[in-house]
Length: 66
Image (tube, rainbow, N blue to C red; front, side, top):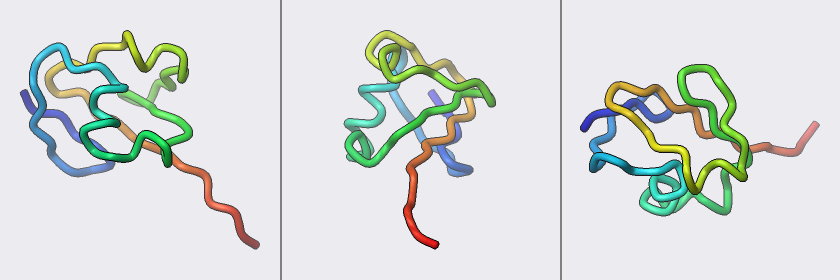
């Protein structure tokens, strides 16, 4: 199935959770927040929140600086 991650098309298997996607993309440790269709998914929900066909995800990390 196809989804959009940070503006880029990705193909994933059905019933993939947020946590599984982060592991697949190797960004789990860097990601601080996940928004799906403009709605934040809490970190404690990543393990159970299933991604659906056509979902638009934004994987956010915080960068320090000034």
